[in-house]
Image (tube, rainbow over all chains, first blue to last red):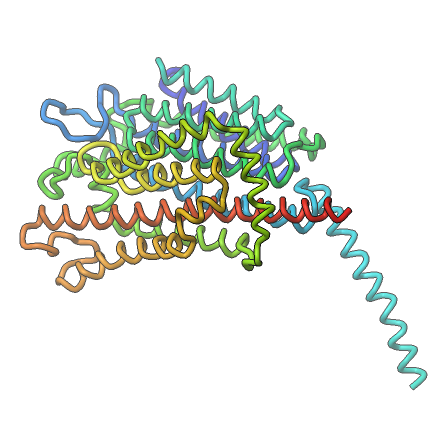
Length: 138
Length: 336
């Protein structure tokens, strides 16, 4: 059982490491790295499911009868290229966040957001009574 | 046996990635991780996938991440949010997943459910129906061509997204400053530059080989596009963005990305107009096998164009953004 399920367990370990990085780390680049680990673990899962003992690569040749399953290969082949394209999109968002906030640490960004929210709230609070006073004077 | 060694190494690298604070080291480890998983895919008979992962995981994604950390800084600040509760969530999820695997068919079992359904048909009949030895290519470009069309459109859309987020209105650039940056780069990497200059024609030629030999061996549009883009990106890294932009016109490369999707879609339309189903190449020419060959050729060409162009667009956008940031910094420091 240990040998038969070893691949699946390694996939789960890699997936959980990726998930842990996404949850516990505040750095946005590190989070994207975690997502990449998670993604690659799924690739490994699909490809190891496609393997047949004694089979070879799914390219037809005359004296070969046993092939590995080609379908997961097709799915993962396209998924890898789509994955890098979406990762690039995430990275470009990180670059824009860095330009706007001057930081890519989640806590700093949250802190700045809270501050600007408080400022806008206090502005509203301070402008609201003024308006009512002006109305009274009028 | 070899796969157990590789998988153990992958786990070790992943744990090292958690512990590293230096993002540069993290990115390098991720490159090694990509290369190792590519070798794992070779051991699992997935040669086409290994090809793609080697070019993407070890090549392009590492370079992209390096460019980004050169803009955003390479230190990770050490605070972690509630590592204990995160660990708890991860442990429970992992335990449930492991419990789920107990019912799974063992690794390499030939009678697993996944090997039923359509897979035997692909393996037994694809030679008569498609006439292409590489089953992965015939599934990718013919049986599941509609699916692949969706993937290509997603890649194209991601490219547009990166352009929308990072492209800047072209301002009159200060040519002197840019040449200063480039000159310093050239003096530093003389050996690499000469070696790369010799290598680039071979990389491009290999990309074309992978593109057009994909029917018979491992390869196809996705792999060829990524390898082609990797050569251009290598050139850009060493010779500067402005030099690369004189070699490859910016608007030309954007046009290529769109034309690739257009070629792909047009093949589907052509099959519809000839009276077949969407992407049913049998009706393109009188002989079904010749029709399949023609359809696969055009589709792989469309995929190759779009993938290569989008990867180059993405890298150019990041590099241009970085150059502008550097210029702004230089101006600020000179004005101070």
